[in-house]
Figure: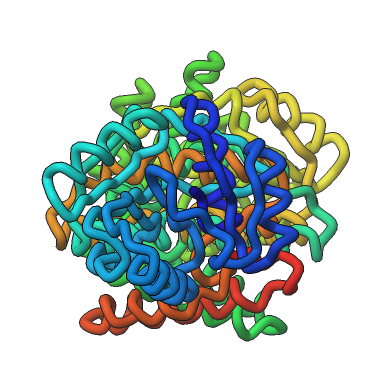
Length: 264
Length: 264
C-alpha cells in the first residue's frame, strides 16, 4: 500500500513495481493524484482512508510531514476497530520520528530515501541511499529486505541521525538547487542562456567528491575581494531578497579560517 | 607574462604551457607564490612590477580585482616611460570592465574562464567556457586564437554581459558549494560522513542539465511543509547564521508560483 502520490511516492512506487512487488492501492486525499499514480503502478486509487484495505503486507506512508500524523491517527482508529495491529507500517520522512507510527501498529519503521526525487524525472533507484529504522530487530530485518529489493545502498540509521541527514540534505540539495534557480533568473533577465553555466555546475558538484567542500571554496567572498562583492551588490540593488542572500552567504563564507583564503 | 599566482593564474598558466606557449615571467607581489607557480610553469618569478620585462607578446592579468587597477596603473607608467604601448594586455576578471586596461596599451582585452579553478585541483581546460572581449576587431581575433589554443569553448562576450555571467556564477557555483560546506559542517558535528550526500549532490547537479532548476526544486520549502521547516529551525537554534540562511532561502523558494508546488 502506498499512501501519498507525490515525488517520493511516485519514484518509490515505480521502484517497488520494478522489484516485483505489487502495490494494491494508492491513497491520496487528492483523488486525481492517486489515480494518476495508480495508473503508473497498475494499482487502484483511493481518495479516502476509509476505503483503504487493511489486509496488505506493508503500508508505506509517503505524504508530506504535515499530513502524516493525521493519516497515522486514522489508521490507528481503524486498527483498533478492525483488529490486526501487526501489519508493517513505515513512513518515508527524513524528519518525523519513528515513534509517530506506534499507535497504528506493533510493527513499524522508517524507509527514508536520501535523494532528490521528482514525479517526472526518472532515477536509477538501485543507487539511491536508503536509510531504514525498525521498532524491533525483526522489523529491521524485514525492512532491510524490503529496502534491499529496491536499492543497493541500505543504511540502518536511528531517528536522531536521520533528522540530521535530512537537514544537511536540504542545504546540499534543495538550497544549492535554489542557487541554480537564482542564477537562471539572473541570466534570463539579461537574455543569456542558462546552459553556459552547466560545466561550472557539474565541476562544482564533481569537486565535492575530491575532498572537503570547505577547502574547495572559490570566488570573491573567500578571496575577500571587496570590489567584486560591492559591484555585485550594486547589480542586485533592485532585488532586495537576492541582495540579502548574497550578503549573508558572502559573510558566512568569509568567516572561514584565514588559512583557506587565496591571496591573489 | 602571467601576473598573479592564484587559482586562475595557476590553471590558465598550466593550460598555456600545455598548448605550447612559453610563460616568460610570473609576477606576484608575494614572491614565494610567484616562485611556486613559476616552478610549475618552467618560468621566472618576479616579486616587483619593476622587474617585469616589457618585451613579451601578451600579458595576462590574473590577480584579484582589488589589485588589478594598481597593476594596470603601474604598467601604464612603465609604458609611458619606456614606450611600446602595443603589447596585448588582458585581464581575466568576470567583473572588471574592458576599459580598465586602456591606459596601459593600445591593444587590450578580457579572457575570462567561466569555471571554478583551484591551484591544486587539475582540470581539463579544453572544456572550460572562456569568454573573450577585445578593444578592436583585430585584438578580438588575436584573443580568439589565444583562447582557442587552450579551450574548445570560446565565446565573445561584452563587458556588461560578462558581469552578469560572473554574478550568476557566484550563485550557481560559489554559493552552492557553500551549501555543501554547511551540510558538511552539520554532518561533522553529528559524526556522520559527508560521503553519504554525494549521490544527492551529483543528482542535483545532473538535473540542472535536464531542464529549468526552478521546476526541479524539491524539499520542504517548495512543498510548503511547515512542520519540517519548524523542526529544522529548532535544530539550528544554536547557529544564528545558519538559521538565518535557512529562513531566507526557504522564504525565497516558497515565493515561487503556486503551480510549481508539489501538493503531497
